Amino acid sequence: MSEVALAFRELYGYEPDGVWAAPGRVNLIGEYTDFNEGFVMPLALPHTAVAAVALRSDGVLRLHSADIEGPVVELRTDELEPRSGAGWAAYPAGVVWALREAGHDVKGADVHLTSTVPTGAGLSSSAALEVVTALALRDLLELPLSMAELASLAQRAENAFVGVPCGIMDQTASACCAEGHVLHLDARDLTRRQIPFDLPAHGLRLLVVDTRVQHALGDGAYAERRAGCERGARELGVRTLRELSSARLPDALRELSSPTVRGYVRHVVSDNERVARVAGLLAAGDVRGVGPVLTEGHASLRDDLRVSCAELDLVVGTAVGAGALGARMTGGGFGGSAIVLVETAGVQRVSAALNSAFASASLTPPRLFEATPSRGAHQLL
Image (cartoon, rainbow, N blue to C red; front, top):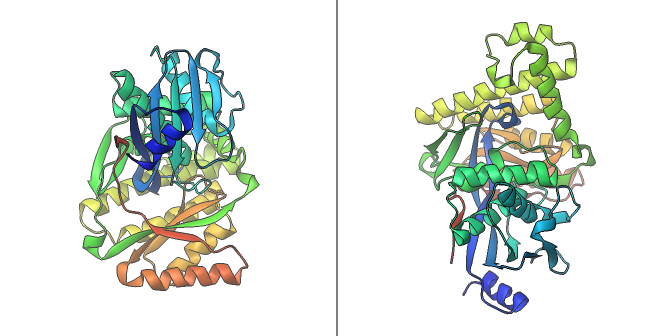
């Protein structure tokens, strides 16, 4: 029996019906594009949220996390209300609410969760909690839902129940990524394409650098940028910025009244194009060519979208200066993580340079680990 199943038994006094896992993700390219119905290219991490779950029939939902100090959170499934201030428990509770809103008869459950996905690092720890809960309940209730449909329900939980206006990328990556691949996702029609991503075969590694910082500026900034993108689309007479081509971009920018919105629009259109460029490079076997596109993407996130910060800029500048092929912030920004594409032989050099740069700036040492493309959500036991 797994440790999480044993913990479930100690907590609730009986055996779980099963154990499931869902990974965090890192996004290779395509940031702030999914809610604009654009393109993204994430990969699943080996870090996962794991849930031991058993069904109940009395309308009670009990939730416990091994990673957050506190008692079991007990809720009534028929009393779940959006934005009810349930803290971390809002993520799995929101999934139960979304399933019930969709007409699925979730009467109750006991859930014990643990996770190795770093929180606050921009690696979708919340999406992993949502997806693992959704998958467990789907399997136990034998619901006719695809992995893509589970991702959409998990997104609805975060949007409507938790109150975070995220796009579809994080939940889809956690649910649908494949081992050894990056996921090319069209956020408009949700078509997916798995692209082989075997970096060691090319003598390369992708490092995740968790800066271990999260600036308060990030509170509400994601929603503000989404609203700005929507404003830009309205002013340009398009439904979403996905409809705006790079050829039309120069003229479109002159039509926008706000310099801030101009930057947002320029970033979204150019990052959609960068996703296409990276897909083409990978198809052609030119994996090293991806590096400069990452660095270009970071400049756009820093200057046009304005979601970077000093620590993320320090990672990118230091890594490239130490010989990395490219680097950029990943995730929502204002802290969190960056990714670095580096030759295998240069990993130690780049890592040492990053640690030295953070020490010189009197910052907490960053957490560095390799991003190994891993499988999406699945049942363990």
